[in-house]
Amino acid sequence: MNVSTAKCIVRHPSNPILTNAMVPYESVLTYNVGVIKFQGKYVMTFRNDYGATEKDFDDLNAGRRKDWPSLRSNIGLAFSDDGIRWKVQPKPCFDLHDDEIFKAYDPRLTVIDGRVYMCFATDTRHGLRAGIAVTDDFTKFEVLHLTVPDNRNMVMFPERIGGKYVRLERPFPVYSRGGKDRFDIWLSDSPDCRYWGNSSLVLGVEDVPYSNDKIGPAAPPVKTKKGWLTAIHAVDRDDATRGKNGWEAKWTKRYTAGIMLLDLDDPSKVIGMSKETLIAPEVSYEISGGLRNNVIFPGGMILEPDGMVKLYYGASDTVTCLATAHVDELLALCNAPRK
Image 1 (tube, rainbow, N blue to C red):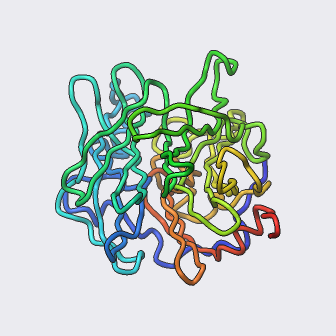
Image 2: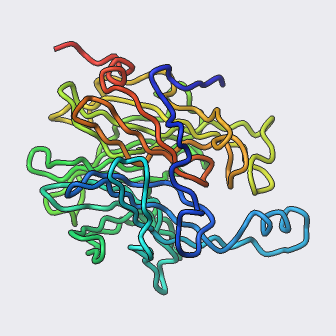
């Protein structure tokens, strides 16, 4: 399966823009971020993994240890004046765990009515759950909602639609999808951000030519005159020819980014979608030296006043990077309707 990065995409020369070396507390991997503009600053929350190192995995693969290396996670916080140079705060801003929940990770940020909503994933004793928390200052978070297992990759739209909060999500149906990865993008709404329903399918994995495994939401949608511009992640798998692509003994998946356009009034309707990848793993920090190489995972998208779009993405499940493109070029990729 041949994939490539769209010509309109420009990787920032400072990539990666966030690494574990920038974090003033224990950190091994810094990726899968949420990014917003809030109160005059760029704000980033990021997945911070710590504990196990590449050597721990090397020892496992070489038979020098029998237990699986334990990577723990919390959520870090960073601020920036330009969206490029980041200052990581002295301690994590969110660390959810108890007797049931092991960890929270993969934050996505959205501003709605002047408040910051953070979607996140959790690993629990009884499955993977997605959550929504709200904050006004990044020091205190109120958890509003946790899904039932299994759900992940949740992102919220930045305004109410038809009076409802709206989110995209990626449930994990296994038995009904042949007992393997065949995961799709769904939409649900809520009157209060606590109780969610009216769920409907938005996009099936079979509709994405560059995926043979699963798809899901990526960065929260941004509003344009032609529709909700929406990043997705897509996975293709090759068990026959891909081997050790990272710290683990075998990693056969490749994650790429795509782009689609949803209807402004009914975002369950896809009105445009690129049939080719938006960003594919190609450069050194995307294809080598990481926990899992060949991974692109967008988590934040900012539409600037001049029409430039900043797309923040995790690379190789290890570092955070930035790419840019003009919104008109992204809309053109979606074959956006003329109005």
